[in-house]
Image (cartoon, rainbow, N blue to C red; front, side, top):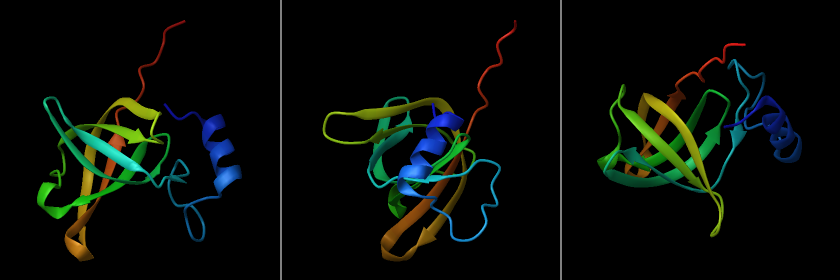
Length: 117
């Protein structure tokens, strides 16, 4: 899970991904790494673009693009030894075809459960 502290540290190190003022509720941090994604029993591959506290973006071949509304799980492969499992249910918000037979995918994470005191 990305926390605001981690997001701030990543943004300070790598800079924001946005050009101009941030319009989202949670700032995005750019990622440039492979991503495995899918639902139970079917894992597919793509390329991570960005992530925030409440969502992520990645690019996939158009032929394997998920449908808006589909629920998926994401794993960012940060390097050869470290995978980052985004252990939250994610819902596909959009799939936008781009050139080269690819598609930009945006997902929104399910809210974290609130703990009762």
